Every structure is written in structure tokens, then in C-alpha cells.
Length: 356
Image (cartoon, helix red, strand yellow):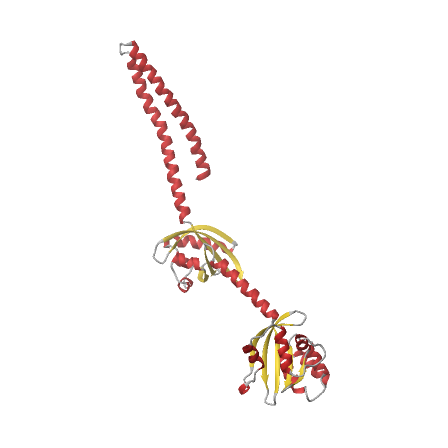
């Protein structure tokens, strides 16, 4: 009977085990129950007034005693708290003080240290029975605390990546025909750039934040994500005040849990557009200046030919010779302008190849 009972206990939760351990502690010899209790990572202590009825191996290791018994539960618990550096009298009183009105202590987290120096997190729950017995249950929660810390770290990294930087990020789903649905997540940059609160922006879709003339283009681009994992294009977004913001969209298709989502990263390219327009204006001016150089040379050469003709008819050989000398000097300057035009044409060709 006892062996069958132990097998059943092994399949039960710790709560069931504790109930059975409590029930059979004083009524029968329970070596298998003790063996199962000692195998647990949780600490279990059952006391009756000033005596210890049962303490499993975990409790004994925490108290620094493997075999012998402490004279009473108060000393055992104080030893555990002292070794763990818990010396706050209010906290000790909360654990060791009386339980008025039979109100149990539940879920108090403690970082306990064994004499070997090993630290583990436990969740202490204390329950006092009407018959005077008290159950101290130290649930081992180190793995849970570690997982929780990693989860918080991951969440913090997510917040830094998602809400940091200079790019707006929105997440949305698309229908089977490629039509974008409402946003399911938006970052702070997107909200500030567009002038919406988080709730206001999440109630919209990508089609709601572009000018009407751009809707068709957005639909064409988003539908590409049905067959492609990533797209890159430029468009404009409409702020809440109606002004336009030119952006570059880098959208990725990925799985979030069991559903496909689109993560769209938008970069404000207002400055890039402005710099491009300034460059284009400068290039146009350079081209106009180069063309003017070529025209200017022809305009000057034609009058020089006429002046040179009049020099031979002036009747004064000395004056005529001086005029011819000055004409040749001017022609030399024009030849330099022509050479400069050739070099300028090379510059223009370079600019066309690399900056257009």
C-alpha cells in the first residue's frame, strides 16, 4: 500500500505531495515519502510548536546540517536567514513571528545561501494549521528568476532597438491579396514624426498615412511582399497637420509567432532630397556656364575679324600694326577660353556619370 501511495505521490504536484506528507507524517512510517521529499529541490519543513516533525534534505543543507536535528524550527530558520545575510529585524519578524488570525504568508521571495556558498532563489510560503502544526515551503525559483531576468533583458534590448535610433518603425499584417491592414505596433519615432499618439497611429494603416496619389504605388509595392522577403522604395507620408514628409521605406516580411507580419522601417529623407536638389541646381548652372563660354568665344571672334579688316585701311601703318597686335592678344585669350571649355566639358561628363 505504501509503495503504491509513493508512486502516486511522485506524479502529483508539490501541493499534493505536501498534503499527503502532512497527513501521513505522524500516522505511519513513511520512508518512501521522505525519500521523495528529500529528492526535491524545494525546501520542506513541518513543525509542531517548538519541535521539528520533518525537514527534507534541502532545508538541512540550507541550515548547514546534513544529519542531525536543530532543537526547534526557530533556530533552524534563523540559521538559514543568518547565513544568507538576512538581518533586517522586520523581515525576520515577518517570517518567524506569530500568524495572527491564521493568515498565511505566501510568495515571499528570498535569496538564500547554503554554507557551501551556493545561492538560490526561493519563494517562501508558511501555513499554520488549526492543530498547531506549521508548514514551511521553500519553492525553488532560481530557474524562473533567471528566465525572468533574461526576459527583462530581452525586453529592454527590444525597447532600445525598437524605440531608439532615428527611423520610424511600424508593424502590420497584410491580407491574402496583399492589402495592408491596421498597424499592430508602432515606435516612438513614427509617432513623433507623424504627429499622432500611439493609439491614434495604431488605429490606422499604411494607406492612411500617404497622400491619395500615392495609394496605388503603395499597394503595388506592398503586394510584392507576397513573394519577396524585402522591398525598398521611396514615397511620402502625410503628417497629422497635412504636411508631407519624404521617406525611404525598407519593409521586411517575417513571422511573429504563427502569423506573418510586415516590419516597415521608414527613414526621413527630407535632407537627402534637399541636398539632391541643391546639387542638381549647381550642375545645371555649371552646364549653362560651359555653354555660355563656347558662345562667348564665337561672339568675340566675329567682331575681331572686322576690327582686323579696318586696321589695314586706317592709313597709318603704326596704328594698324598696334591694332593687329592687340587682336592677336585677344585671340590668345580666346584660345585659353576654348581650352578651358574643353576641360569644363570633361568635368561635365564626369558629373553626369557620377552624380546623376
